[in-house]
Length: 331
Ligand code: UDP
Image 1 (cartoon, helix red, strand yellow):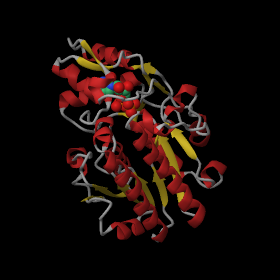
Image 2 (cartoon, rainbow, N blue to C red):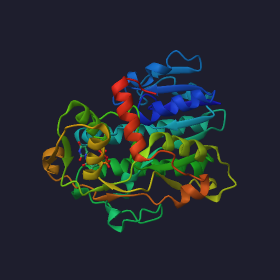
Image 3 (cartoon, rainbow, N blue to C red):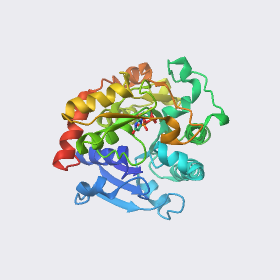
Image 4 (tube, rainbow, N blue to C red):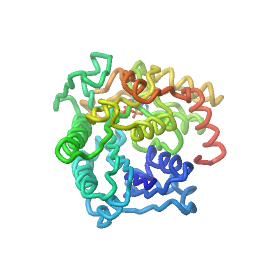
Protein backbone atom coordinates (compact mmCIF):
# COMPACT_ATOMS: atom_id res chain seq x y z
CA UNK A 1 0.00 0.00 0.00
CA UNK A 2 1.18 3.55 -0.74
CA UNK A 3 0.95 5.68 2.37
CA UNK A 4 1.40 9.45 2.61
CA UNK A 5 1.96 10.91 6.06
CA UNK A 6 1.90 14.67 6.57
CA UNK A 7 3.74 15.65 9.73
CA UNK A 8 5.73 12.47 9.12
CA UNK A 9 8.74 13.60 11.15
CA UNK A 10 6.59 14.47 14.14
CA UNK A 11 5.87 12.33 17.15
CA UNK A 12 2.88 10.33 15.95
CA UNK A 13 3.89 10.67 12.27
CA UNK A 14 7.34 9.15 12.70
CA UNK A 15 5.92 6.23 14.67
CA UNK A 16 3.37 5.70 11.90
CA UNK A 17 6.15 5.73 9.28
CA UNK A 18 8.02 3.01 11.18
CA UNK A 19 4.81 0.98 11.62
CA UNK A 20 3.90 1.01 7.92
CA UNK A 21 7.45 0.36 6.75
CA UNK A 22 7.64 -2.65 9.03
CA UNK A 23 4.49 -3.93 7.39
CA UNK A 24 6.03 -3.59 3.93
CA UNK A 25 4.13 -0.49 2.80
CA UNK A 26 5.69 2.30 0.75
CA UNK A 27 5.77 5.46 2.82
CA UNK A 28 6.18 9.08 1.81
CA UNK A 29 6.56 11.44 4.76
CA UNK A 30 6.28 15.19 4.36
CA UNK A 31 7.15 17.63 7.10
CA UNK A 32 8.36 21.22 7.31
CA UNK A 33 10.41 20.30 10.39
CA UNK A 34 8.88 23.13 12.40
CA UNK A 35 7.91 20.84 15.28
CA UNK A 36 8.87 17.56 13.63
CA UNK A 37 12.53 16.60 13.91
CA UNK A 38 14.76 14.89 11.38
CA UNK A 39 16.24 12.76 14.17
CA UNK A 40 12.80 11.11 14.50
CA UNK A 41 13.12 9.61 11.03
CA UNK A 42 16.90 9.22 10.89
CA UNK A 43 16.69 5.46 11.47
CA UNK A 44 14.22 5.08 8.58
CA UNK A 45 16.10 7.02 5.94
CA UNK A 46 18.01 4.03 4.60
CA UNK A 47 14.84 2.03 3.89
CA UNK A 48 14.09 1.61 0.19
CA UNK A 49 10.34 1.99 0.76
CA UNK A 50 10.75 5.29 2.55
CA UNK A 51 10.93 8.78 1.13
CA UNK A 52 11.10 11.98 3.15
CA UNK A 53 10.24 15.37 1.70
CA UNK A 54 10.84 18.58 3.61
CA UNK A 55 8.07 20.94 2.55
CA UNK A 56 5.46 23.30 3.87
CA UNK A 57 2.00 22.02 2.97
CA UNK A 58 0.82 25.53 2.23
CA UNK A 59 3.12 25.84 -0.80
CA UNK A 60 4.26 22.29 -1.57
CA UNK A 61 4.17 21.98 -5.37
CA UNK A 62 4.18 18.20 -5.36
CA UNK A 63 1.17 17.86 -3.10
CA UNK A 64 -1.26 16.85 -5.86
CA UNK A 65 1.20 14.35 -7.38
CA UNK A 66 2.02 12.67 -4.10
CA UNK A 67 -1.60 12.58 -2.96
CA UNK A 68 -2.61 11.06 -6.30
CA UNK A 69 -0.31 8.08 -5.67
CA UNK A 70 -1.50 7.42 -2.14
CA UNK A 71 -4.01 4.78 -1.11
CA UNK A 72 -3.97 5.95 2.47
CA UNK A 73 -3.22 9.44 3.76
CA UNK A 74 -2.66 10.42 7.36
CA UNK A 75 -2.90 14.17 7.75
CA UNK A 76 -1.13 14.94 11.00
CA UNK A 77 0.76 18.11 10.10
CA UNK A 78 -0.37 20.85 12.46
CA UNK A 79 0.88 23.40 14.90
CA UNK A 80 0.86 21.42 18.16
CA UNK A 81 2.22 21.60 21.68
CA UNK A 82 0.86 23.96 24.30
CA UNK A 83 3.85 26.35 24.31
CA UNK A 84 3.82 26.67 20.51
CA UNK A 85 0.05 26.97 20.26
CA UNK A 86 0.03 29.84 22.75
CA UNK A 87 2.99 31.59 21.10
CA UNK A 88 1.89 31.28 17.47
CA UNK A 89 -1.87 31.85 17.26
CA UNK A 90 -1.76 32.96 13.62
CA UNK A 91 0.10 29.83 12.55
CA UNK A 92 -2.46 27.74 14.40
CA UNK A 93 -5.26 28.83 12.14
CA UNK A 94 -3.30 29.20 8.91
CA UNK A 95 -1.53 25.87 9.11
CA UNK A 96 -4.18 23.81 10.83
CA UNK A 97 -7.06 25.02 8.68
CA UNK A 98 -5.50 25.92 5.31
CA UNK A 99 -3.18 22.91 5.08
CA UNK A 100 -6.08 20.59 5.81
CA UNK A 101 -8.10 22.24 3.07
CA UNK A 102 -5.25 21.71 0.59
CA UNK A 103 -4.87 18.04 1.53
CA UNK A 104 -8.60 17.35 1.24
CA UNK A 105 -8.85 19.20 -2.05
CA UNK A 106 -5.93 17.20 -3.47
CA UNK A 107 -7.37 13.92 -2.16
CA UNK A 108 -10.61 14.48 -4.05
CA UNK A 109 -8.61 14.85 -7.27
CA UNK A 110 -6.38 11.87 -6.42
CA UNK A 111 -6.60 8.70 -8.44
CA UNK A 112 -6.82 5.95 -5.84
CA UNK A 113 -9.96 6.85 -3.89
CA UNK A 114 -7.67 7.18 -0.85
CA UNK A 115 -8.73 6.70 2.74
CA UNK A 116 -7.88 9.97 4.47
CA UNK A 117 -7.28 10.11 8.20
CA UNK A 118 -7.72 13.67 9.44
CA UNK A 119 -6.33 14.00 12.94
CA UNK A 120 -8.55 15.89 15.31
CA UNK A 121 -7.88 16.42 18.98
CA UNK A 122 -9.49 16.03 22.38
CA UNK A 123 -9.09 19.80 22.66
CA UNK A 124 -12.34 20.12 20.67
CA UNK A 125 -14.11 19.19 23.88
CA UNK A 126 -13.02 22.63 25.02
CA UNK A 127 -14.70 23.49 28.27
CA UNK A 128 -17.28 20.77 27.92
CA UNK A 129 -14.93 18.80 30.16
CA UNK A 130 -17.09 19.75 33.12
CA UNK A 131 -19.26 16.89 31.94
CA UNK A 132 -16.34 14.53 32.52
CA UNK A 133 -17.82 11.93 30.19
CA UNK A 134 -16.29 12.85 26.88
CA UNK A 135 -18.54 10.97 24.48
CA UNK A 136 -18.17 11.90 20.83
CA UNK A 137 -21.67 13.38 20.73
CA UNK A 138 -21.57 15.73 23.75
CA UNK A 139 -22.28 19.37 23.04
CA UNK A 140 -19.09 21.35 22.69
CA UNK A 141 -18.62 24.50 24.74
CA UNK A 142 -16.13 27.23 23.84
CA UNK A 143 -15.46 30.69 25.07
CA UNK A 144 -13.01 32.99 23.30
CA UNK A 145 -12.53 34.71 26.65
CA UNK A 146 -11.09 31.60 28.20
CA UNK A 147 -7.58 31.66 26.86
CA UNK A 148 -5.39 30.77 23.93
CA UNK A 149 -6.38 27.17 23.69
CA UNK A 150 -9.67 28.07 22.05
CA UNK A 151 -7.98 28.91 18.74
CA UNK A 152 -6.34 25.51 18.59
CA UNK A 153 -9.54 23.74 19.62
CA UNK A 154 -11.54 25.53 16.97
CA UNK A 155 -8.91 24.84 14.30
CA UNK A 156 -9.20 21.13 15.08
CA UNK A 157 -12.99 21.32 15.10
CA UNK A 158 -12.74 23.04 11.71
CA UNK A 159 -10.66 20.10 10.47
CA UNK A 160 -13.45 17.73 11.47
CA UNK A 161 -16.02 19.87 9.70
CA UNK A 162 -13.84 20.23 6.60
CA UNK A 163 -13.37 16.45 6.44
CA UNK A 164 -17.09 15.84 6.83
CA UNK A 165 -17.85 18.42 4.14
CA UNK A 166 -15.56 16.70 1.61
CA UNK A 167 -17.09 13.38 2.55
CA UNK A 168 -20.64 14.62 2.09
CA UNK A 169 -20.09 16.64 -1.06
CA UNK A 170 -17.53 14.51 -2.90
CA UNK A 171 -17.80 11.10 -1.24
CA UNK A 172 -14.21 11.32 0.03
CA UNK A 173 -13.51 8.44 2.41
CA UNK A 174 -12.41 10.05 5.65
CA UNK A 175 -11.69 8.87 9.17
CA UNK A 176 -11.77 11.45 11.95
CA UNK A 177 -10.03 10.41 15.16
CA UNK A 178 -10.12 12.73 18.16
CA UNK A 179 -6.72 12.04 19.64
CA UNK A 180 -6.32 12.24 23.41
CA UNK A 181 -2.94 12.55 25.13
CA UNK A 182 -0.43 10.23 23.51
CA UNK A 183 3.01 9.40 24.81
CA UNK A 184 5.95 7.40 23.55
CA UNK A 185 9.21 7.45 21.60
CA UNK A 186 10.04 10.59 19.61
CA UNK A 187 7.84 12.93 21.61
CA UNK A 188 9.73 16.10 22.42
CA UNK A 189 9.25 18.07 25.61
CA UNK A 190 10.25 21.32 23.89
CA UNK A 191 6.69 22.41 23.14
CA UNK A 192 4.92 21.30 26.31
CA UNK A 193 4.16 17.56 26.45
CA UNK A 194 4.56 16.60 30.03
CA UNK A 195 6.01 13.08 30.07
CA UNK A 196 9.13 13.67 27.94
CA UNK A 197 9.76 16.75 30.09
CA UNK A 198 9.49 14.73 33.30
CA UNK A 199 11.74 11.98 31.87
CA UNK A 200 14.44 14.49 30.87
CA UNK A 201 14.22 16.24 34.22
CA UNK A 202 14.41 12.96 36.15
CA UNK A 203 17.44 11.75 34.20
CA UNK A 204 19.19 15.10 34.66
CA UNK A 205 18.44 15.03 38.39
CA UNK A 206 16.54 18.32 38.06
CA UNK A 207 13.22 19.06 39.79
CA UNK A 208 10.15 17.82 37.89
CA UNK A 209 8.06 20.87 37.02
CA UNK A 210 4.43 20.22 37.96
CA UNK A 211 2.16 22.98 36.71
CA UNK A 212 -0.66 24.07 39.05
CA UNK A 213 -1.13 21.81 42.06
CA UNK A 214 -0.82 18.61 40.04
CA UNK A 215 -4.38 17.46 40.71
CA UNK A 216 -5.32 17.82 37.04
CA UNK A 217 -6.12 14.46 35.48
CA UNK A 218 -5.04 13.08 32.15
CA UNK A 219 -5.27 9.70 30.38
CA UNK A 220 -2.13 8.78 28.46
CA UNK A 221 -2.16 6.38 25.54
CA UNK A 222 1.06 4.84 24.27
CA UNK A 223 1.64 6.00 20.70
CA UNK A 224 1.99 2.40 19.54
CA UNK A 225 -1.56 1.77 20.73
CA UNK A 226 -2.66 5.04 19.14
CA UNK A 227 -1.29 4.13 15.72
CA UNK A 228 -2.65 0.59 15.87
CA UNK A 229 -6.07 2.14 16.50
CA UNK A 230 -5.62 4.60 13.62
CA UNK A 231 -4.58 1.82 11.25
CA UNK A 232 -7.52 -0.38 12.21
CA UNK A 233 -9.97 2.51 11.91
CA UNK A 234 -8.61 3.32 8.45
CA UNK A 235 -8.76 -0.31 7.36
CA UNK A 236 -12.30 -1.15 8.36
CA UNK A 237 -14.81 -0.84 5.62
CA UNK A 238 -18.11 0.84 5.07
CA UNK A 239 -20.07 -1.99 6.67
CA UNK A 240 -20.01 0.11 9.79
CA UNK A 241 -22.46 2.97 9.81
CA UNK A 242 -20.06 5.08 11.89
CA UNK A 243 -17.36 4.76 9.23
CA UNK A 244 -19.82 5.17 6.34
CA UNK A 245 -21.00 8.42 7.90
CA UNK A 246 -17.48 9.66 8.70
CA UNK A 247 -18.29 10.02 12.38
CA UNK A 248 -15.60 11.20 14.78
CA UNK A 249 -14.06 8.55 17.02
CA UNK A 250 -12.24 9.15 20.30
CA UNK A 251 -8.80 7.52 20.30
CA UNK A 252 -7.02 7.18 23.61
CA UNK A 253 -6.59 5.19 26.76
CA UNK A 254 -9.19 5.69 29.49
CA UNK A 255 -6.99 5.05 32.52
CA UNK A 256 -6.76 8.21 34.59
CA UNK A 257 -3.82 9.60 36.51
CA UNK A 258 -3.11 12.97 38.09
CA UNK A 259 -0.08 14.90 36.89
CA UNK A 260 1.41 14.81 40.40
CA UNK A 261 1.12 11.01 40.45
CA UNK A 262 2.64 10.92 36.96
CA UNK A 263 5.63 12.89 38.26
CA UNK A 264 5.97 10.54 41.23
CA UNK A 265 5.77 7.54 38.90
CA UNK A 266 8.59 8.87 36.70
CA UNK A 267 10.77 9.57 39.75
CA UNK A 268 10.11 6.12 41.22
CA UNK A 269 10.69 4.20 38.00
CA UNK A 270 13.85 6.08 37.10
CA UNK A 271 15.28 5.86 40.60
CA UNK A 272 16.00 9.57 40.28
CA UNK A 273 16.87 11.82 43.20
CA UNK A 274 14.84 14.65 41.62
CA UNK A 275 12.35 16.59 43.70
CA UNK A 276 9.04 18.07 42.51
CA UNK A 277 8.70 21.77 41.90
CA UNK A 278 5.24 23.33 41.63
CA UNK A 279 4.91 26.13 39.09
CA UNK A 280 1.77 28.25 38.77
CA UNK A 281 -0.15 28.10 35.48
CA UNK A 282 0.43 31.84 35.06
CA UNK A 283 4.16 31.30 35.27
CA UNK A 284 4.07 28.28 32.98
CA UNK A 285 1.73 29.51 30.26
CA UNK A 286 1.20 33.22 30.87
CA UNK A 287 -1.79 34.94 32.42
CA UNK A 288 -5.41 33.98 31.69
CA UNK A 289 -4.52 30.44 30.80
CA UNK A 290 -7.55 28.31 31.41
CA UNK A 291 -6.31 24.86 32.24
CA UNK A 292 -8.27 21.68 31.65
CA UNK A 293 -8.80 19.90 34.96
CA UNK A 294 -9.74 16.49 33.63
CA UNK A 295 -9.59 14.83 30.27
CA UNK A 296 -10.51 11.21 29.86
CA UNK A 297 -11.94 9.70 26.70
CA UNK A 298 -14.98 7.51 26.52
CA UNK A 299 -13.73 4.86 24.11
CA UNK A 300 -16.82 2.69 23.67
CA UNK A 301 -17.06 3.57 19.98
CA UNK A 302 -13.39 2.80 19.32
CA UNK A 303 -13.72 -0.52 21.17
CA UNK A 304 -16.86 -1.43 19.26
CA UNK A 305 -15.35 -0.60 15.88
CA UNK A 306 -11.83 -1.94 16.33
CA UNK A 307 -11.81 -4.23 19.38
CA UNK A 308 -9.27 -1.78 20.83
CA UNK A 309 -7.37 -3.05 23.86
CA UNK A 310 -4.29 -1.03 24.85
CA UNK A 311 -1.13 -3.14 24.95
CA UNK A 312 0.99 -0.66 26.85
CA UNK A 313 0.50 0.42 30.45
CA UNK A 314 1.83 3.83 31.46
CA UNK A 315 4.46 2.11 33.61
CA UNK A 316 5.70 0.11 30.61
CA UNK A 317 5.80 3.21 28.43
CA UNK A 318 7.78 5.16 31.02
CA UNK A 319 10.24 2.26 31.46
CA UNK A 320 10.65 2.03 27.69
CA UNK A 321 11.26 5.77 27.37
CA UNK A 322 13.82 5.74 30.19
CA UNK A 323 15.58 2.82 28.56
CA UNK A 324 15.65 4.49 25.14
CA UNK A 325 16.88 7.74 26.61
CA UNK A 326 19.71 6.00 28.43
CA UNK A 327 20.67 3.97 25.32
CA UNK A 328 20.14 6.93 23.00
CA UNK A 329 17.89 4.93 20.66
CA UNK A 330 14.64 5.89 18.99
CA UNK A 331 12.82 2.69 18.04
N1 UDP B 1 2.40 19.85 32.68
C1 UDP B 1 3.15 19.91 33.84
N2 UDP B 1 4.50 20.12 33.72
C2 UDP B 1 5.14 20.28 32.53
C3 UDP B 1 4.36 20.19 31.33
C4 UDP B 1 3.00 19.99 31.45
O1 UDP B 1 2.64 19.78 34.96
O2 UDP B 1 6.37 20.47 32.51
C5 UDP B 1 0.95 19.59 32.79
C6 UDP B 1 0.06 20.50 31.97
O3 UDP B 1 -0.22 21.69 32.66
C7 UDP B 1 -1.16 19.63 31.76
C8 UDP B 1 -0.60 18.21 31.73
O4 UDP B 1 0.70 18.29 32.30
O5 UDP B 1 -2.04 19.74 32.86
C9 UDP B 1 -0.48 17.64 30.33
O6 UDP B 1 0.22 18.57 29.53
P1 UDP B 1 0.55 18.32 28.00
O7 UDP B 1 1.14 19.58 27.48
O8 UDP B 1 1.37 17.08 27.90
O9 UDP B 1 -0.84 18.01 27.33
P2 UDP B 1 -2.29 18.73 27.45
O10 UDP B 1 -3.17 17.71 28.09
O11 UDP B 1 -2.16 19.96 28.29
O12 UDP B 1 -2.66 19.02 26.04
